[in-house]
Amino acid sequence: MVPRPRNKSNKGLPQNLYLDDRRGTYRYRRPTDGKWFQFGTDRVKAVDAAKQLNLAFMQGADLVGVVLGESAEMFTAFLDDYEKNLLPPRELSKGTLGLYAVHFRRFRREFEGKAVDQISIRMIAQMLDLLTPRTANQCRALLIDIFNHAAAKGLCPDNPAASTINRIEKKTRKRHTVDGLKAIREKAPAWLQNAIDLALITAQRRTDILAMKFEDVKDGYLYVVQQKTSKASDAAWIRFRVTPELQRVISHCRDNVVSPFLVHRRPDRKRQKQAETKEHWTKVEERYLTRAFKEAREAADCYKGWKEEEMPGFHEVRALSLHLYKKAGKDGQKIAGHASEGMTKNYQKEHAEVIWSEAVPDLDISEIAG
Image 1 (cartoon, rainbow, N blue to C red):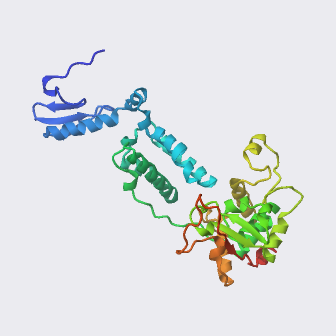
Image 2: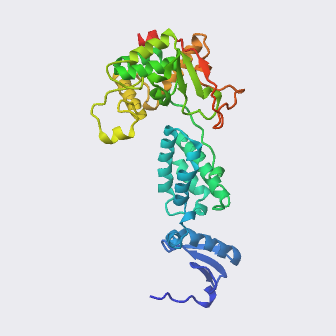
């Protein structure tokens, strides 16, 4: 059916904008529900506002853009390009890429059908408001980088994510106590006990603990390349002197399961698909370690009265380790791989030589490990 032509008063006006001849004012009819809004007597302002509103209500406009070959300007298409071409050269860790993938799925759901330059500050702010402060800040930082690249390609006039405000993160997780971790360790399977002991004596992150191999122990040292910071500082390359304390932990890691990894386990059942994606069938996945640690903590019931969000996980073993090193009067900075202000990058692709930071893991963990 051909739409009825507009009367003389409304000719030349954008769709949904009308002139009230009696009052000499303009009014806008919202297409979704027919509700009227008064726009005053200023024709220029009324026309400009109506055009912006019409653009927002044009639900099919983005689909038209796809048909016309403009999909490169769609946010989801640009995000595909960002993920495929811009991230790989950064050589991010597997854990970071996994976290990004979760955020990317959220972005695709939130901004599906939107062109890059259609995404406003308000849209981003509304999405971030629904997230926890930590997740919101992670998403905001990632979106700022995404829109920086989009703006550099001329796909949007500015960076809407940069105009949002960083949220204040209030740390809710408490630290482990010596008695609490001891109780958890007693409820843990042997492989998890080994992981806890390694975390206590080396103060390394979950990712680096699970990546340690027997072949990394050579010439009296355990060599570790921190996956999170290997491109940021000298401290990313650490060699731990195999002290009697560390040797005891390494010896406990050897059992009747043949594995290249210090922390390993025989799966309850081998799944072909999982075996194909893992470096070795005995390797412990990060998520599995986190889940197993939580189960041991719940079985120990060692933090009575603490809220769920206050319960420390495996990551907090590292914090306890640094606390115990400091309490013993030892330097925990080199152990953890924290770079001092004076440190600069020592590793670049054209350099064949790596300078290793030496650490002495000599913490007495017998109070916890027995």
